[in-house]
Length: 149
Image 1 (cartoon, rainbow, N blue to C red):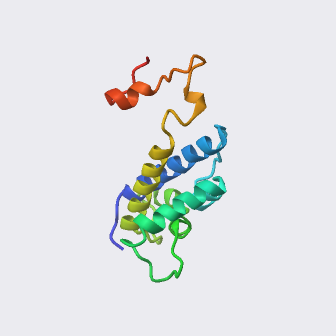
Image 2: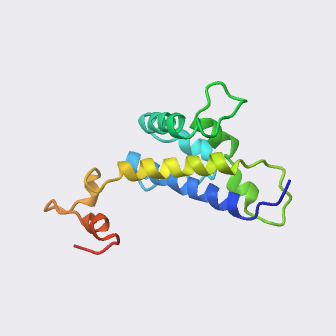
């Protein structure tokens, strides 16, 4: 297998952080799992979030990155296949026997991040609002950068 460098590890870490952030927003609780297992992190999300991500995966990722090994190919399959990618790929000097499907994984990560951004509008999450109803994050979308209001 051709050496892929650090890309699989970084992509897996990005997915791990995205799923942990999704958990924090699902449960309004910063105490997320310490696991690197992507499949377990996904399973800890609310069922509504799992279903939303799976539906969007089937609509926007699966048609472009099909997998002939699964009849009912969903996001859970990609996350399970790459569940330990961060651990498996984090040290360059260790031999890699693990397969990493970069195209499907990267498309899945982009979809998760896009869905996260749609769902985390400052107007949706009450803990972003001040007691007077103003939102300190409002300027992020208006100016392209964070500035306190």
